[in-house]
Structures are given as C-alpha cells and as structure tokens.
Length: 156
Image (cartoon, rainbow, N blue to C red; front, side, top):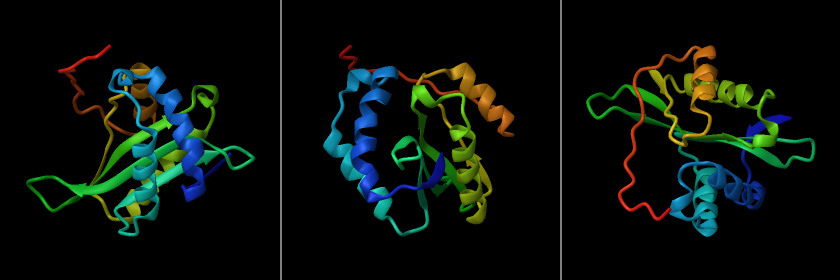
C-alpha cells in the first residue's frame, strides 16, 4: 500500500469506486453522476493553489482503494487558516488495515505544513459512526459537536 497524491489516471477507478461508496452510505437516494464526479476530481488534481489536497491509498498495482480530499479555508469571523476534510473513505474490503491512519497522517502533515490553526473533521456519511469516533479520537482529535441532516426531498 502506498499513500500518494492522486493523478489523472486515477479518475476512472475512483469514479467506479464511487458506486460502492454511494451504495453503503446515507446519500444513495441522491443519485450518482459519474461525469460530475470525474470533472470534480480532475479539478482537484489539477488545482495548483496549494489550498487543496487529494490523497489516495493504492494497492501494489497502483489501483486506488481509498481517498482523502481536504482544503484550507478560514472561519467567517477570522483569517486564521483551518484545514477541513472534504471526503475520506476506505473501501470496505480494506478497512482495518493501515490505509486510514496513513491517509490521515498525510492530511495532518499537509495541513501543518500550511500553518493551519486547526484541522476540522466532519463525519457526514453515517457509515460506521462509532468506529469513526474511536478512530479520530485515537489520532488526537476531540469531539466538538455533531452533524445533523434533514433530507428535504427524500426520494428513497
């Protein structure tokens, strides 16, 4: 397993993995647009601003099976930079290994190198919330609130 920045050739396998992600999470009723995902992934990979990161964990054949996307922002009341997790997912067949820890370590180092004041994580998928809580606490994160969602037009 290798942790590295995503490359353009990773887009097709990541778009395929999108089906697996969506099938297990709470957002499956929203539908899936692989073309939109591919366009957004391409934009992240090609972004040279230094304010976004896109890491993957891949197998020995350099095929991604996990991804982490993050960005630097600031609070609306302060210019202090914070890093926020956009997306973090490990394929179910690879959970329990080292990929999640290594991806988060890469994200933390990336954020620290950008002199952020805080790294903010939100768990919004509703996938294994209890495990996510334990995982993030073991990495030194503190629980500071919760995520709440109200599906207005639930097609499911």
